[in-house]
Image (cartoon, rainbow, N blue to C red; front, side, top):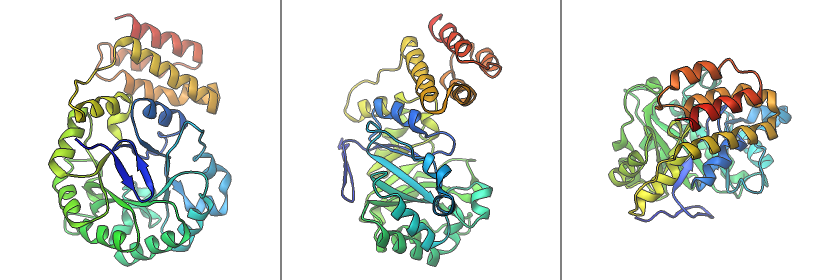
Amino acid sequence: MKTKLKIGSLELADNLLLAPMAGITNLPMRLLAREQGAALCFTEMVSVNGLVRDGEKSFALMRSSAADRPLGLQLFGDDPELLAAGAELCEGLGDLIDINMGCPVRKVVGSGAGSALLQNPDRVRSIVAAVRSATSLPLTVKIRSGWGADTVNYLLIGRIAQDEGADAVTLHPRTRAQLFDGHADWQHIEQLKKTLTIPVIGSGDLFSAEDVLAMLNMTGCDGVMIARGALGNPWIFREALALQRGSAKIPPAPEERFSVAARHLALFAGTAGERVAVREMRKHLCWYARGLQGAAQFRAAVNRLEDRAGMEKAMYDFFMQR
């Protein structure tokens, strides 16, 4: 199976992408995903309002390193001029710009951004055209199927994005009204792939390597963007690549689970300080433990920990003594 993916001028070795996730896909998370085979990783969503008007915190979300490339920068907002200005500010910080038109979160939608834009195709057209004019970087758009069951318009939005110069479209085939309930309708990805000539990237309900292979085979999409399936499971990229190449997947042994989780903590402490790292790693360790015997007790213990040494001991005891 062909695994290479080209998005505009950006040539990727493989077709597996780590999705942008608010509060999740910081530098440590991205580095771990890359080590397991993710060909392109995205920053968290970055507000163009914050980027243009008060940039320090917004630029911090795009903190990167030489090992963190190629890097996708995801911007959100509802103003074409501000989005264009934000794209200009991103020059040199990453290798691709993505416009978020799919986030269903109330705070984002309430500002007119994210999936709220799906209700206004003319605004979508203006935004893509403005950003395309402002940057020479590859440009992608991430969308949902529509606002609600009676306003499914992903084919229209996809055509608009293509017509205005987007280099690829990512589709999470749920409506905004669904949030993350129910099942993603992969047939929408298949229909979008048949409609557009630019690459189509599929997303939604990818929790295992088998899911990744099934989406690629069913929809014919050019690549997949993995989100929740990568939480505590960076190995999903390695395993999915193995299946695409006709090899057997190799699940992580307890030693590898421990070493990767420990590396995650160390990277986090190195970039954010130990206090922040310990607090934020609680949720990640809960994900790393998912499905393992004793996970409930481990989660309860981890969520009470306040220091790095205690967290490292709890990790060792849980992952290595089984």
